[in-house]
Amino acid sequence: MVYIEFKELLMARYATKKFDGKKIDEDTVDGILEMIRFSPSALDIQPWKVKVITDDDTKKKLSAASFDQPQIMTCSHLLVFCANTDLVGNGDKLIGMMKVDGVPEANLKLLEDAKNNFIKLFEDKGLYEAQHNVFIAATTALYAAKSLGVDSCPMQGFDPNAYSEILEIPSDIVPTIIVPLGYPADKPNPKMRFPKEDIFF
Ligand SMILES: Cc1cc2nc3c(=O)[nH]c(=O)nc-3n(C[C@H](O)[C@H](O)[C@H](O)COP(=O)(O)O)c2cc1C
Image (cartoon, rainbow, N blue to C red; front, side):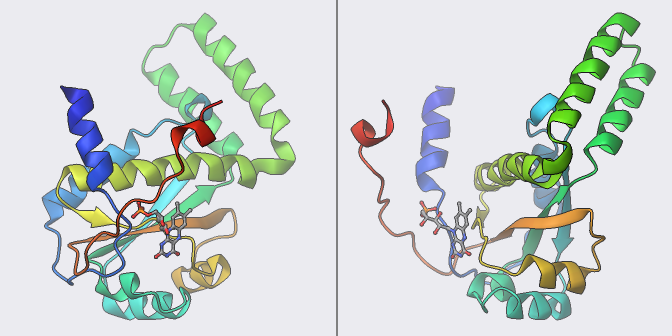
């Protein structure tokens, strides 16, 4: 039953090219953001920050830094998914939260070791590693939105450096993928997917 509902959601979601400008109510937006928060990440490091943009002045500047793609100006809310490259900081924060939560010392030690090894492994690739996780959070946003009747588009057609400058984002937080949300003013194209024998091997 749940499978059928998710499949319907999956098939109904599409990359919306143009929204009708109608505002999504705040409860619905909060519902989407809350679901994003529960996305999985490697060792639960949660290396993401999401900027939520609604005002037209900022959108205008961001639109110019996104090849003037129509989603930016017509969406209700623009989510800018950023990679938080401070993996060590997030790891420490998480361990601190677990201590407060009363996680047994032995389990904490295991996790702390795993985190240290993991972080060391990706020492010089912090951004690369963080961005993998950010893509998963952005994917959650697409389906969370659709489950609440809101359409979206995953987008990488934008200039991350220009976004950082416009949004005054510090250099350890890197814009990675954007997800405009809203109600559609277009229609989905037929899905064009490779056959399963080309994918599963
Ligand atoms: C990483 C990524 C980047 C994308 N960037 C853009 C973009 O900049 N502009 C756009 O209109 N669509 C963008 N898309 C949407 C894809 O074109 C779309 O998902 C694909 O054609 C399949 O169509 P569907 O999502 O409607 O099934 C992007 C999708 C992904 C996953």
